[in-house]
Every structure is written in structure tokens, then in C-alpha cells.
Image (cartoon, rainbow, N blue to C red; front, side, top):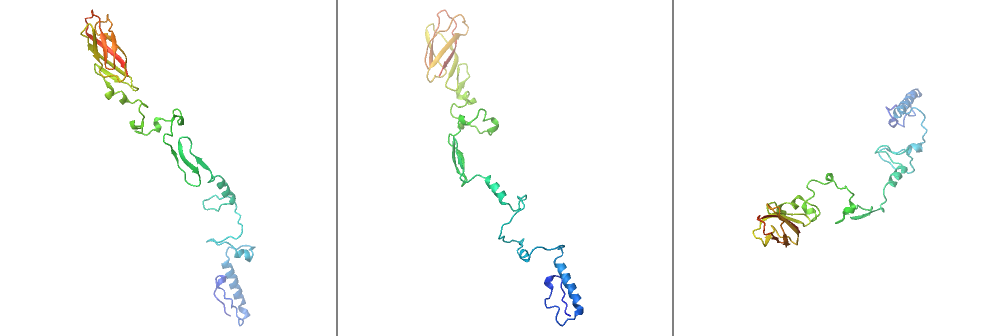
Length: 254
């Protein structure tokens, strides 16, 4: 009797047993068939209820096409899990529609619907005091050296340099220019005449002298009469009985 060597079903020879084989070797063929079936299906321990059509339509894990509806057990819990329609619909509903419009508010430019990337920019001069809350800008929000004199409008902020340099002379006869235009001037002059005598300020007031007052250095009993002022000079008319020639003065103008 012809008896092939087989381990799996695919190894069986459908031509065996041959018609000339003796019945005595039939048990060898039966044992061979049983061995190949068990080797081919080593993990089948119960009844297989799938039909041949269902078995023929199993999905290939390397890739396949589903021709009918597929029901999943639930929402995905891992990045590589398949997602249910309900899961996708919920995620999609949480996103803004492309027709949603982003509008530029006061002091801003740009915007548009979400069908493309949009940019919102601060318009020139768009940030004013009405856009800033009280105490909204603090030193913690301003970078070091971010505020420079070039970025500050004239007169907007009083800086140390507004009082120093060419804005002051701290000599015996000197002046101090203040932010806003006010000018203080002082000094000591020698009055050598008992009649009206003119003296010149250290610098000229650009517009006017508001007031000038004076006093003798040593003669406190007599007042100093300043009878006239201009942007550049003041006039002193001292009493005849005064022997003190030194007069201190203080003037305010702009």
C-alpha cells in the first residue's frame, strides 16, 4: 500500500490509498489523517460553528476590505484603536466650524473666518489708556531697557534728564528749567546806585517773567523794591539810606 509522509492536511496525497492497496493498511491511512488534522488545527478544542462562507470571509490582518457594516465594542482607549462613529461625531462637534468668524476688536486689525489661517495685529495707535486696565502694566511686564526716550512722547514722562544738563545751572547765579516750561532763576547782584538800576537774569525767559523778589544780604530793615521785569532784566530801586550793596533775588517765569 502507498502511504505518503504528511504532517499537515496540505501534505496529504489525494491519490492514496490506491485501488490495489490491501485493506490491512487502512489503519495506517486513518492514523495519518487524524494526525494531520490535529497538527493543522492544534488549538481547536471545541465545535467550530462558523460556516464555510463565514470562514472564507474572515479579515486578513495584513489588510482587507469590509463590504458590510462593522460594529465596534466601544470608544477607542489607545492611539491605534479604531474609532466609532459616535466618538468621531462628538470630537467633530467640539470643533469650530470653518464659517466661524474671528473679528478684530477695538485697536486691532485682521481676522476672518476659519477657512484659513488668520492673523490679529495691533493697529497703529491701537492701544490707548482705554485698552489698559488700571495697574495693568507693571515693571514685571516690561523687559529691561524696553522703554527708551525715543518711545516716549515729549512731555509724557518726566525723566531725570529733564532736570539736569542744559536744563539747570546750580551756580550762585543760576536757574532750573522744569518740565512743562516753568523756569526758576536766582542770584546775587551788587546795587551801587540809589536810583533805579537794571540787572540781567542768568538766562532769558522765553515768554515772560511772572514775578521777581529780592532782599538785601545784610540790611534786613529795608525792603528791596523791584519795580519792573522783562524776559531778560529786572529793575531795582533801592532806598537812599541803604548802605548794603548786595541783593539776593528770586524770579519765576516761563
